[in-house]
Length: 141
Image 1 (cartoon, rainbow, N blue to C red):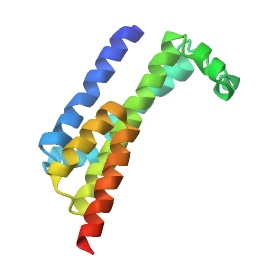
Image 2: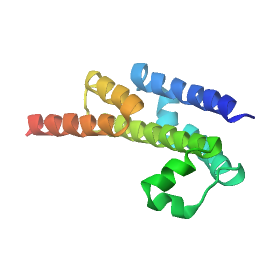
Image 3: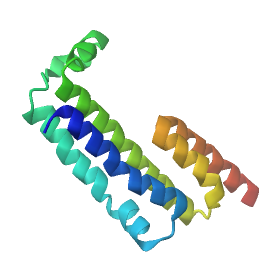
């Protein structure tokens, strides 16, 4: 499979879970996906494949400099592996945020922007959620 085809498939793979977390957060299949993390696990398999088994040009010293990272990511397989890394971690963090918000009884309406930002900008969504969670906690006390 070409890296471009894999990119398209893996991008599409994460969308259903993100949509379910946004519109059906309490549905049993959504609960299963956020607790068991089957999609991030599958992404991890692809990550390993593209990083170690495809010709990614992986050189551990590449991680020690910005120029090394730039050179590493000039290889399609390594670039795809980096993107898979983002997809997997953002989805894992979004899943944790949703589980945590349910346990802390954060209204889902407050979670929608947090999840959207996590989907689009990863750490920004996490930071927003931590702020929302903090404000919710302070409102209780």
